[in-house]
Every structure is written in structure tokens, then in C-alpha cells.
Amino acid sequence: MDLNGTQIKVHDMSLRDGMHPKRHQITIDQMKSISQGLDAAGVPLIEVTHGDGLGGASVNYGFPAASDEEYLRAVIPGLKQAKVSALLLPGIGTVDHLRMAHDCGVSTIRVATHCTEADVSEQHISLGRKMGMDTVGFLMMAHMIPAEQLVEQALLMESYGANCLYITDSAGYMLPEDVRSRVALLREKAHPDTEIGFHGHHNLSMGVANSIAAVEAGARRIDAACGGLGAGAGNTPMEVFVAVCERMGIETGVDVFKISDVAEDLVTPIMDFQVRIDRNALTLGYAGVYSSFLLFAKRAEEKYGIPAREILIDLGKRKMVGGQEDMIEDAALTMAKERGLIA
Ligand SMILES: C[C@H](O)CC(=O)C(=O)O
Ligand SMILES: [Mn+2]
Image (cartoon, rainbow, N blue to C red):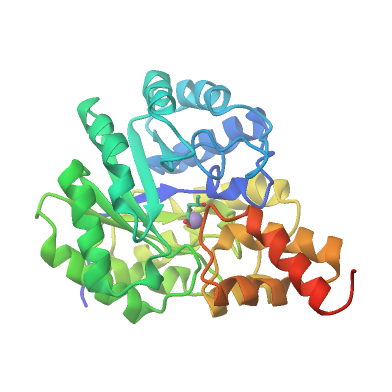
């Protein structure tokens, strides 16, 4: 397909999805320097919050190095052209968080639900729209339901006021055809003015290919993370995606060398471990497991002696989804008892 001249908006995830592998400990100074690097490289939209969105600071999800408000107030004034988005999962983030983010200068709010639960997003989507924000409905774990059902859910979000609808491959499970069929059907059924977006994870090394498939099928907003810093094996690596787009004539407005320098000089050095497709991250993609579960499974491995890979397979079989983080330890404990590792 000839995509020469197609304009898309790339959206950086390293400072939000990248909070997962950082256990939400990215410092204010790191947020400032990385966001300013992304801004100078031409990235138009940058997400900043706790990894689990506004209000994520908790025993269940982990306490961050600074509050959402502190991050947002530190980052936004330092940007010349880039805008800032915030993620919000209803049930974790409240309307007060949304108002706070708006007050800090956040211009895009992304209201995220599990792919079958769009109906819980009405209050936050309608408020975002009422406040004049770019308002996105973000359907997570989108591989778990067929395209027709996913589109029904997305259209609910559109009916609440979302001007952009996201198909989110939280598990990095999808293959290009899975992405193409879902995006194409959504593009056909959504209002022509509604934008379509895609958020990928690189657990099967499909982040770039899947994002290109999404663009071919009509998506015009693509999430990617500089240096690939994101949950699991990371998100679609921004610098690679931008380079591929340039080769294909897809216009992102991002400078390939500048974004590669941000990845190399600012993002990679802050990683606590190399974010890559190791056996555990591969299992996420292979078994269709929520990428944010990776560190929880690794911690449970240390505590109970059950390999993280086996815990992840078990979570996949039980079809566990975001919000059930507290069940991971429970699953590991049960496996350890069954294997006689503990009484
Ligand atoms: C809260 C999750 O990290 C949202 C996300 O990025 C995904 O589902 O993928
Ligand atoms: Mn993600």
C-alpha cells in the first residue's frame, strides 16, 4: 500500500508506560530532560503520569517517585511545541484527578478500560470533552475479543464524546492481521471525524509491523516509546518506527537522528534492566498476558520459587486482566502449595 504523504501523530509512552519497568521511580529531573529531548526531536504528544494513570499511586500498583501533579507541573512549562497527555483508568483515577490534570495544562485525556468495559468510561469521557480536551477512548487487551465486539465497545466511547478511539494491544499478542482487521472495521464504523489510534507492545517483536498495519488500515495516531521504554518488552520503539515511517514516506514530523539520540543518551541510561524480549516478556506476547504483570510475576518468582514464565502462563489461562495485580501473588502461592514448595 502506498502511504507516501500520509500524516500521522506519534505519541510518546516512555514517561508513562515506561514507568512500569521503572517501578514508577522516574525522577522529576529525568522526566524534564527526557520530555525536553522528545520535544526538541519533534514528538508532538507525550504522556506523563504514573504507569497506571492518574491516581495510580497505591499499594496495589506501586508508589511513584513524585505525584502526578508534581510531574505534570514540572514537565509542561519546559516544552516548546509538544503537548502532554494523561492516562486515566476509571476506578483508579477520579474526576478530581482529571480536573487537576486539566488545570496543570494537560490537553489530551485518555480514558482507558478493559476492552469489554467501555460503559464505565462515560463520566470521564464526557467531562474531558466538556472541558474542551482532546478526549481519547482507550480499549485495553483488545486481542481478547473479536473485531465486531471491540468496535461496539469503541462506539460506546464515541457516543460519550471521545474524538479518538484506541485499539490497545496491552499483551503484545496481536499479529499484523489482527491489528489490520480491527482497525479497518473501526475505521469503517466510526464517525469519519473520529480519529483511530493504536498502542502496541513489542513482546513478539511486532510493535513496528503492527503499527504500520494500523496506519495502512486507517489509524492516524500511533503510540511508541523512545528507547522502547514500556511494560513487558516495551512499546513500539519510537526511533525505529519513525525511521521506518520515513522510509515509507509516512510523515511524523520527528527527526530520526534526534530521537535516536534521546533514546541512546537519555532513556537507555535510566533503565534498571535492559527492556528486551527475554523469556518472560516473550511469554506475555505468546500467552496474551497484560504486559504490566511482568514485574509482579518476577517478584512472585523470587518469593515463592515458581518461574515467572509459569506464573504468567497461569495468569493467561485464567484470563486475568489489568486491575487484578493483587491476584498474582495469590496465583504463585497456590502453585507453590500444589508443588509442595510451601506448606
Ligand atoms: C495501564 C496500562 O499500562 C495501560 C496500557 O498502556 C496498556 O494497556 O497497554
Ligand atoms: Mn501499554
